[in-house]
Image 1 (cartoon, helix red, strand yellow):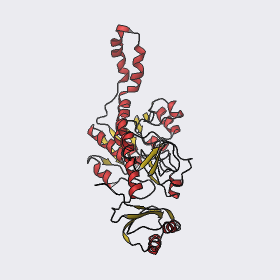
Image 2 (cartoon, helix red, strand yellow; image 1 turned 60 degrees about the horizontal axis):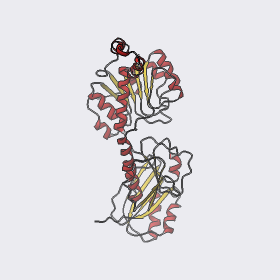
Image 3 (cartoon, helix red, strand yellow; image 1 turned 90 degrees about the horizontal axis):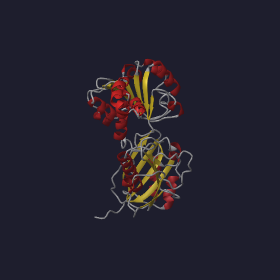
Image 4 (cartoon, rainbow, N blue to C red; image 1 turned 60 degrees about the vertical axis):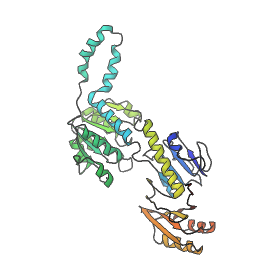
Length: 394
């Protein structure tokens, strides 16, 4: 029986995939095997000793102490792409709001209340102040071509926009998914200088914080629209205010309001609605649960932030999974200890990610608790688990 703690409301469609025979699920729980979380801030939380995995029902993991988890051998999952369509649709909502001055128009119409039969004439007279532009034919630059960025790029192309993108780390799969007419920019500066719209789709880290700053605002065309549905902190607020005042940025549309942004003119602040659809919440929950189950039951890792992707079919009824620092002779030490129990390795896979490695080892018998403890005590081993193949009713 695996114990799962939920730190936020998680869609039932996802949790229902954990059968009640094998899982106990609750929001209050001591010593959970797994934690499923959305926005709950875990950074100062004491991690239970028994914790094996954390699944974030969403893409960002700023609310999870990833480094602390790694030191304890806790695998952290996220769900990239599960909410991509939801975010993409909101990006275009923001883009169209900016192009057609929807926000200003919505705020003006209530001022006509009480004008009676004059309302239709006043509408016709006043609508000229909200004359906007079409997005078709305009150029949009996409910074970051992950799951969301690719969707935004392809949709913009379908709507008749000229699309350029920048992502030095684009995956082969995402590159294949891009429409062939989407052009590649060699640098962010090149993209910034030539676009009517710029849409950000990158993570927030030390390298991207304040990415859009005074130097890049100076490169922009006059009246550029900047869209940020990725992360707060990617735009330098003080530099943005100057760019707005000077007309370099016509409008800033963001899903991450703060005190400074709320007070600025020509900023459309949305209350972090990117993944706030029923479909996105369900997709994220299902993906998080499935990844958690695969790891707890089979040792398989998919979409981990801190450990490498790793999968191996069961070829025996017993297996070891081991996470360790990627240093020489780790596999040799592990195999030597296993041999003491007269156990043979039938099949194994070893994957590494930066300074970390992960092993799935199919073995032909059970190992003793003392042998498992010896493996855990190898210098550089972060986690070791032994379990049997789950019996499936036919």
